Length: 296
Ligand SMILES: Nc1ncnc2c1ncn2[C@@H]1O[C@H](COP(=O)(O)OP(=O)(O)OP(=O)(O)O)[C@@H](O)[C@H]1O
Ligand SMILES: [Mg+2]
Image 1 (tube, rainbow, N blue to C red):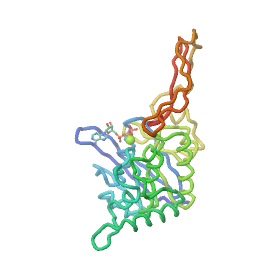
Image 2 (image 1 turned 90 degrees about the horizontal axis):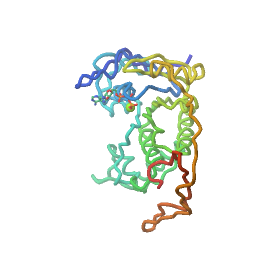
Image 3 (image 1 turned 90 degrees about the vertical axis):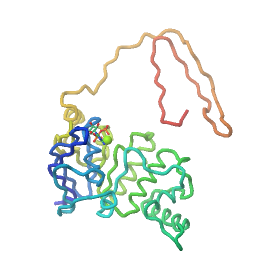
Image 4 (image 1 turned 30 degrees about the horizontal axis):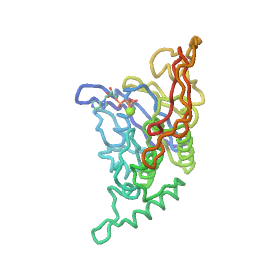
């Protein structure tokens, strides 16, 4: 039997505006697993994790860490306990370098001055230990989003946590960055650590999670082995009714080509904004243009 590393019992949280974000939630996590926390927008996932990470105080309920009752008072207390969190919105300081961000809050000092060399060394050592290469001297603002996230993850791991909470980590990533993140998460798990993975992307949950807890309107709808529930069952539990996962569309009636773009490139200074882009649109169609922020 694997041991239960975390247990949250009967957690309730009412915000000051009267919104009941968590209502009698029971949530338990086994050591060494990737545990998905799923639910629609506003279901209360982030709130539950903020309670765990010491950002929000619960109105009711109790938290047990490795079998012992614990009252987590602050994020610092959570980190000391062994719990790290990567937030839905990054918390890095964009104007600082990776190394400076890594040591924020725990600055190594020499004669009262921040020891930048030590920070770079610390960043390199952490990056090597977890096999997450990063340039310590890069300014965070200049990094692509996947790299920013890597800094957040490294920062949490550098504090020696053994449970990592990731709040919708793939929302801002390209498919390639997502694959890379998954590789990193599996490696962290294989080192004996535990992950709580907040998501509402069922495919991703199926791909890397072991168990799933589903929340709806502040309540826990149960915990399941990921291998034993279908995507259809998960989405029904999330929204409270049957959901159509297949979309039926009639065939478009396409007319003539009305717009064509051929080999379009554009520079801004040295930066290439567009690189040889071609596309054409016909009347009667809706064309999707896909890509993540900052890609033209
Ligand atoms: N600081 C706050 N003050 C008041 N209400 C809040 C606060 N934070 C969240 N809420 C509300 O509490 C409910 C639960 O929000 P929460 O952020 O926990 O949901 P979530 O499951 O993480 O949703 P999402 O998928 O959109 O991130 C929502 O109705 C939200 O509007
Ligand atoms: Mg959230």
